[in-house]
Image (cartoon, rainbow, N blue to C red; front, side, top):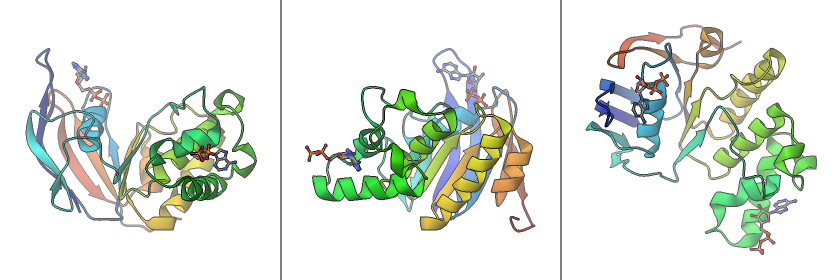
Length: 219
Ligand code: ADP
Ligand code: ADP
């Protein structure tokens, strides 16, 4: 269970980006966070990922306070953010340095195959299409087997066909281990297609305005 308790963030410039956000996300739930620009969605993901610290409140995963980047929490951004000087396989394996190299290679190869890019393991990021690069970002985030995967507008830079394809693919990947997914999106259709629950945010200060349970099963 991922629990956000009265989470708040005031930046150094005085902006109250997030205020009194409390959410309890059971393991395996898929949650979409929607709302216009500036309502604190990215701030929320940064706090949950441990990349930034809250001003007040706490984030707990299975009871453990999250205050720094954590191996159980994976992150995918709008841009793939691959390291250009590393091959696809080395990008995916980057966070697994602690594993013995044989196991690392097996895990990386399996995860790259799982995102449909077995033939791209040895290529450079610049040789990939936008959709392929984002598949690599998904592979890099999932190869560490996180309990929680945070995605910040993961498909919004892609064309409509690629976006639909990757939404389906994300659900396929989710079935492998059923991590908790938190997907920030501007796209209400995407939220409905993916999520069990939709959290609607409102700005100044960023707060949860509504939580909507999606009643129909995914198609
Ligand atoms: P969203 O992702 O919903 O667009 P953000 O979390 O990026 O919202 O931003 C929420 C508010 O916090 C906005 O008013 C934004 O300008 C402000 N903000 C975001 N990051 C910072 C920062 N590093 N320093 C100061 N203000 C920030
Ligand atoms: P070491 O020198 O520590 O043995 P290697 O580079 O030989 O490291 O192998 C481990 C790394 O190789 C992994 O991090 C993995 O990302 C990367 N790697 C390179 N090519 C491949 C490939 N085709 N399939 C899987 N992993 C690969």
